Amino acid sequence: MIGLGAAIGISNIANYALGSDLFIISISYPLLFGSIMFSFVVGIISGVLPALQASKLNVVDALRY
Image (cartoon, rainbow, N blue to C red):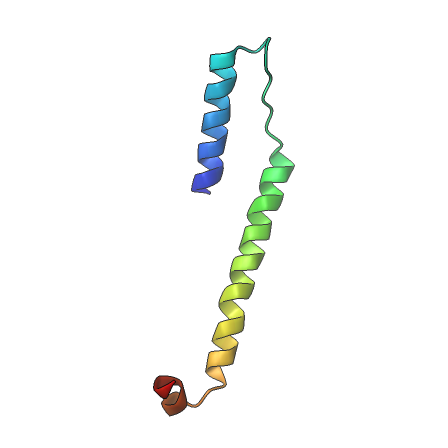
């Protein structure tokens, strides 16, 4: 979310600095939503899979290795 906010801010600054006639920067909000959802799904998967594997281990074996 911080990166998306920074990207939107930088693109607005660049659009203002370059002038609207020379270079037009547009933001696709469906693409922003899709990128947030993709990162959310990847984060959930990479958090849940190791937790499931760790829950199947014996506590003494997990601490030993």
